[in-house]
Length: 131
Image (tube, rainbow, N blue to C red; front, top):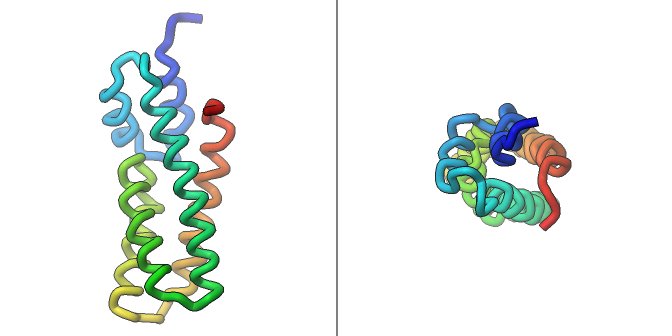
């Protein structure tokens, strides 16, 4: 085996479900992966997404539309930054519906958002080194 950059192996394992170009841009911030930036960013994303998903479930149960909107807004940005483009788009759609107080199709959209989060987290988890 060669002295392959460990971040390159991580990039290959994550594309898809994460956008390869977005991951490559992150990887370019730490040439050679010497500082472990990509795994750190993905661990942070994993932890924050788990917290946000829990907050979304709680807000949905409570019927708190503003809290749901805030979760969608926050998750939209973080998912875009790591290349989770489908999740980011679902969040943008949910955020807009919640902002406009449009309930048509909102529940299935939030169901899809939760499912996408869970699938992404289950993909990330085995690939992330321990902190």
